[in-house]
Amino acid sequence: MTRQTYILIVSIYGFLLGISMLLFPKMALGYFAMNPEDTFTVGLMQFFGILHIGHNYMSFMLRKTHDTTVVKAFLLGGAFILLASLGLGLYNVFGRNLPMHNTAWLDWSLWGILGAVSLYFWSKEK
Image (tube, rainbow, N blue to C red; front, side):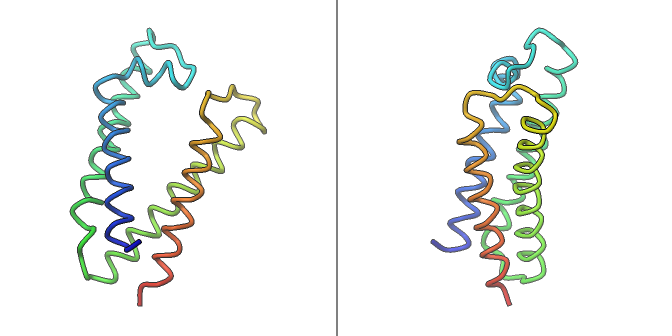
């Protein structure tokens, strides 16, 4: 797999996640075992959806760049987001006893793999 293909896959995943958070926030909140009737959390979920869409638009547009500084910054930032999210998710469930959503293990595995792949491509940039 090339760096461009990896970033394309991550961008598509992020777009889908962001669109679902923005357009279907109540469904997304229910998925994470949160109250879908709380208007504050609905608005917060939509805000995070917009963040995902914006971030993944940048991913999509940067995937073909040959500017090493931009690529390295993007890949390291992506690795941080993914691996820090994994660590926080694990801490919240096992350290703070927050409820685990149905596919937490799948999500956490995906974040770990994608974070490791980001670090791999980051290390290959000259």
